[in-house]
Structures are given as structure tokens and as C-alpha cells.
Image 1 (cartoon, rainbow, N blue to C red):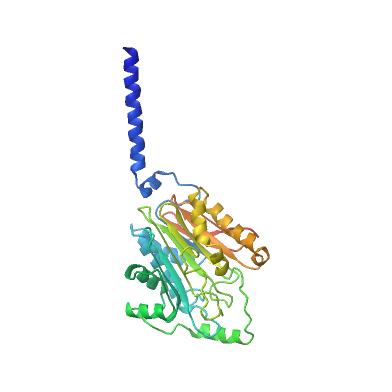
Image 2 (cartoon, rainbow, N blue to C red):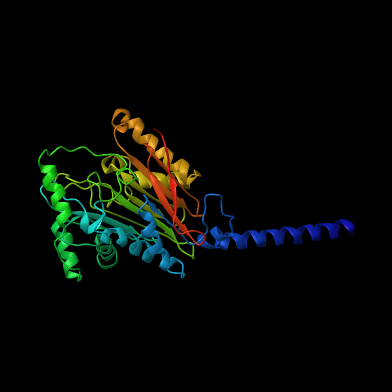
Length: 343
């Protein structure tokens, strides 16, 4: 009789444990993520991170949405529009330095928690390419529109067509024409070359997790100053300059886009996180692959990756020292962190 009672007790215990396990398995990915204890490098939910020091102002704008329980997609769009509109920032948006022929052309992409994405490349006369990229995502069957077609679509959607070449940018371009030398300069966003300097040519990439645990990302740039007309870097390329997988995390990049494209960098970082790497380790591995393929070239250029996983842990890594990123959460809205690097 005692053996029978013991068997019944053990059976009930087994069923109770099994039911508890089934309940955990039934949780949505976002709900499960919220049950995890935040790591030392995690800000909890919601959180937004972005590249470079000027990401602070962008993050604060994104926080006006995230802090009220808003959607990550809305937050990243609103956030990166801040540097796009900054007349002192010559790497992003309307005040971006032109190509070698004097044309200001912009690139941007955006991606939401469901894998929907939109992109524009080499778009002209439109101050906020990130919003056009979102319109491509939501109002067309396509992912990317480029050049005149992108501008035409933007105008049809009600975006204002305007001259983007500012007097300051035009003056810098004419000064460059005197020598017409072209060589990318590393870390033009750091304190030695703040936005507005003649060396400025880079990107803002932003990643956010909202209160529901959903991820979105945005990336926007005016590209490299004095580039060849029609040149497009990694920023508007889904999988290169930006990638988001709501089950895993998101990644974005900055620096010389050609090298990021060759390695499908942001997608690589997310896949490495999928297989268990931390955000920082995944970024470091992506950087090392660039160096391994072109060791001599890598010594002369900068590429940096920034990533966040589903738990809210974030990290970054770059080829050269000097890369920084900004973090914003409920505890602090103006945190700037120096990213680790190989050199």
C-alpha cells in the first residue's frame, strides 16, 4: 500500500512539473525575456542604443516614445530624425556633405519586430530619408527604392522636395575641389572630429526594445563626403548596415560600408548571437572577419558594430579605437560608452 501511495505522489509531482514547464514554453518570446534577470550591461526594457556621441540627442527623442510605452519602430524613426535635421551634422540628413559632383544623396533603412523592412538609397532633395524608408516598407510591395525613383515616390507620398546643399556644405565642397583628394578618415564622429568638421562622413544606427520586448532598428546617413556619384554604402542595405530578428536581437554598423557589405556584417552579428554569443563577442567576431579577409586594408579604416540581444544586453566592437555609442533607459538618458577595439 505504501508503495502505491508513493507511486501516486511521484506521478502527481511529475505532472505538476510538466505542466509548469509547458506554461513556460507557452510564453511569447517577449514575455520570456522579461522573466530573465538583466545582465550587468543590460538596461532592462525599454531601452534604446545608437552609434556615436550624437546618439545621445537621438536617443532622448526616441525615449519620448519608449518611456510612454510606445512602439520601438516609432521610437527609432523619431530618434534618427534628430540628426537628419541637424544643420551642424554633415554626416546624416539634410546638411550632409555632397558627392564629388556637388549632389547631396542620402541612404536609410528601417526594420521592425516582424521582419518588415524598407530602404532608400541615393535619394536626393528629401530631408528625412528614414521616413521615406518606412513608407516604402508600409506602402509598397518592395524593400528598396533608389535614386530618382525614390525621390519620385517620396514626393508622391507628400514629402517636401527641397535643396539640401547648405551654404556651409557647399563651401566645404568647393574647398575640397581645390585638391580633390579622397581618403576616408577614421573616427570622424569622436571628440577630435565632432559633427560639423570637414572630416565628417558617417552614420547613425539605432536599436530599440520597447516595453513589450519587441525590437526595431533604423540606420541613416549622407554617406561618405566627396564619394563618387551613385555610391551606396552599407547603411540602406538590410543585413549589412542593419538587421533585426525579434527572437534574437539586432545589430547595426558604422564606418567604411564597403567592408561591412562584403561580410553582411549586421546579419552576421545577429546570427552569432543566435548561436549563443554575447552582443560584444558577436561584434568582435564580425570585426575579426573583416580583418582576416583584408588585414592590410583594415589597418587604415574604421568599422564598428553595435548590437543588442533579446534580453536587453548590449555591446560593441570596432577595428580602431575611438568608436563610441550612446545608451538610454529609465535610469539614464545620456550615457556614452567607449567601444572596445582590436587596435
